[in-house]
Length: 352
Image 1 (spheres, helix red, strand yellow):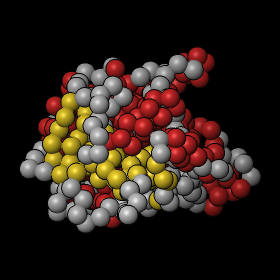
Image 2: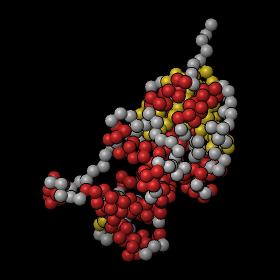
Image 3: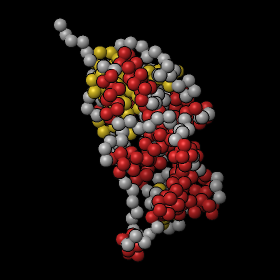
């Protein structure tokens, strides 16, 4: 995936054709202004106030309790980036964004957009990371309140991925037990339990995060088949022969190679014969790793905010093989370009 400039008139088209447009300024000043406009609209509740109706700037400012003149400038900026349209002195959110920006939509990204205020502060340290190569280890810095916001943001990112993942996993209809390592908000467990009526899920989450995870997860399920367990997958015993499915989504980039190798061996022991281990991650592969903006910038972000990095399919397959698992076909998801499911199965005993 790429994003690129689009000329709005002939003069701009000529400027772009002859390399007269100051692209670095547009990619920085204009791009981060636009990003902050979207974040501010989410943080102030402007998107919810706009809803699906047309409103004046004055009415919207009153609804969100903000300054009228400043709110009008924010609305004009949303119009300029095609998030809203202006007509007859009123503003209206474009319908293509109802899915992503209104709270009644299960696909909404409002929690993620609001948490990006925190992520913005992390990215302010990018130069220090480049100079020193030292990650900031975000999970050790989050306060209890920030854990709630973080888990909400991760739930937003995971919802559409969870829907597609539930459709693509090679899990038998009679699957009974799954372990979701770092499953937090429970989006994956919820969708899998919907599809497989006999399945019960255990979500293993860090002690500092488990209550925030439970609080968010209970907004979307009744808790009858989804259970939370406090612990650390790297340190705790995961059991033996217990699970038809073990998942680790958006997790292994936080661990180094040796930690991931040890975790995979523990997962192999915890799986029932025929059970599968699924890792969901941004996977840098071949040319795409350097040319796809989502994959390449995510790899940089993960390396800065964690102690590790994005892993390739080959590296993940090596962990699986060393643990005695059989790698299956890697599956790409349409919901998020660059996101892949690497799947491995524990061999079933041979029938006599």
